[in-house]
Length: 310
Length: 310
Image (cartoon, rainbow over all chains, first blue to last red; front, side, top):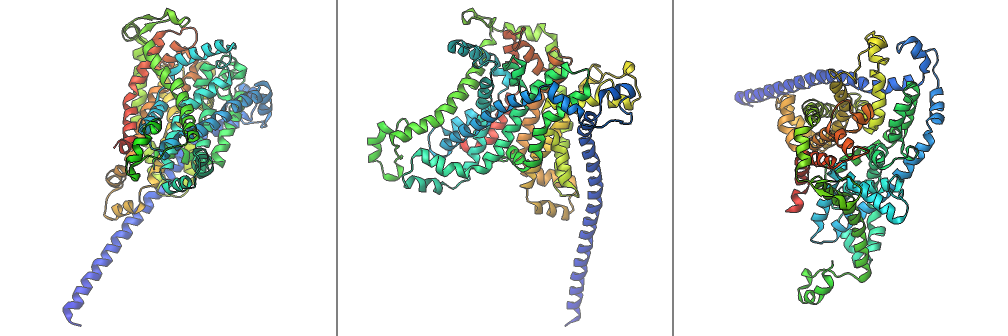
């Protein structure tokens, strides 16, 4: 080994060593930074949860105690009394039943019709495909206020035609239909982008086997759509459950309203017992919280299916 | 599909590859039903009413007999622009809302997503904490925040103020808009974080690592490496930010009812289309709301359908 070669090797080694030093420094600096950021984010996360935790805590205390000693007084009584009386005095079971009566059929129809639409648009080639998809997606983005007046008049007119003014207006059916009409656009869009990722060969083999369109959809495609349908189902359930506008404007009888718009009315009525109202709000939030904790994956992927296409 | 019968003889003569598959009668019927029902429902309850509202916004109508509709030209719009000062107040609030969301809430959501994506310690918990408010209905959010901000709520309690001298956070014009924006951001930040996080998951982690090894600062690697690869999500985030700011309704309605303690377009439309004050001025308001959100809608559609149209 000659002297020069050794020098070169040495130089290269030193360079490598230096580079490693530098990388280590970068990584260490990153670690320190990460820790600081982590503390910050953690602090804010707790601040984020605080309003919910505080409402929950308050719902366990009788309002009398707060009237007497102020919000910061030490709790003498902590129990679920507010919950039991909220359920009976606010007629929460009725509101929950109303919500179910609207949400379940609406979600079912959205998923069914949305997947039918997406199926035809992606699996059969018509010239109108893109136009139809565009129509549905754009329709989904229109402000609900823009369609309200005519829908309201149409509902009343159809009611008169059928001989029952409350056939669509002030009836769960009317609210279901408007949700379906609007949200189908989103479902179609999401499902069609999912279907595009399913290999065409699957459809082709079904067609070669002589399957009818009907069989092709219900036997071949629908089972493959389970993951996006689950996500969409969870997302749509939360959306419709949380909807406020349509139930407010298309229903006039309070006892028919779903729980979220019912809560709006109760806010006015139970203004004298705020802790009772807190219990009511917690109960109203319970189903979506359960969805959140149990089906979080579906909820998130439902939201992002539409966001990150393909 | 419609043309396949009449064209069949012609198609027979074409080379086999170019020939469209012809459907049996039953299949054609099935396909017709598959797209017919959803399309009918969507057009009848979304597009037709939307068009009708646009027409009605140029008329006078009491909303009872169709025969009573009178052409009004631009009168409703003139009325809004020149004789309704509250419209400009509301527009100003919406613009403040948009600026707040665009400059503060949305960037914070993106920042959170970016930091949480690095899998810092406890990132699962942080994620959950930040997007818990996303699943809550705005009605519930109204009750929860009212708990903190009422005259005998926590904040006034902490400030040591008696009910008689308590700060009225919702009533006082100096505070109410900021209080409401805080409440709205509480939900919006989590929502944006969620969307962005899903997008970031798709960005190759090694890209970021490479950038930091090359000595790029955090900001540089975000701006130069991550942000450009996130274009589809960026479009959605921008669209959501604009649409939510312009259409804000639920939260304000929950707090103030239809009286409108804080003027905002969503509530103005509501006051003019529903209930006793209904007039075609409401239709004009709805059209204005629609026109304001048309730019983001088109941007979104363009981003989503660019490939399809080609």
